Length: 243
Image: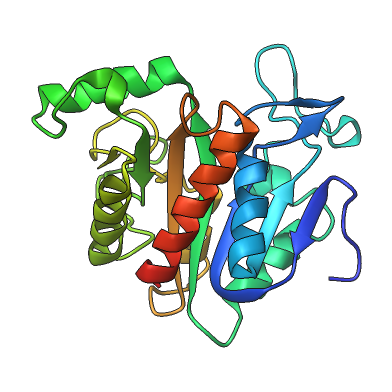
């Protein structure tokens, strides 16, 4: 990793636990996209000394904003976009090729209303007991098929036992969490073009890497710096126990 883009930070550390915040840039003094996920990543790194990758500058294209590497308009959870960022792919491959097994946590954010909608969806299936506004997090690990390819089977990026323990510990800590059901339109970590599937698609098995996408609600968890730091402390303790 000789060249690193000025839009990312790679915080060196142990690779048994790895944290990536691909959508938490701070642009002109304002957090964008998955706000304050970068603060959560920084604090977990401070507490655990784990290998951490933080997107400081790249804005996830949406609406009228189109992909443009020169303008720092790239989605750093997409593999094709990320290939344009010096040092980013190399850092992820460094994790996968390390001597010890890695648990990779992708930090994402979900809007409050989207979290409520997902809660109602899961309530209808008997997979969540309300009230809907209490749902705070979703875990994605490749459940269900890939709608873009037509493949119907799961492509699990982590062991079922791992995500079950992770969910149980999050709930015990006070963060109400569910595993996203296999037919949910989004938030499943199943898209082959995005990084949760990258390790599986490149031949790494669960003895080498387990990868989990965590979607965190904004209110109460990352709506302020103080809440983001508190969330990071809870996650750090859980990751230590999980690993």
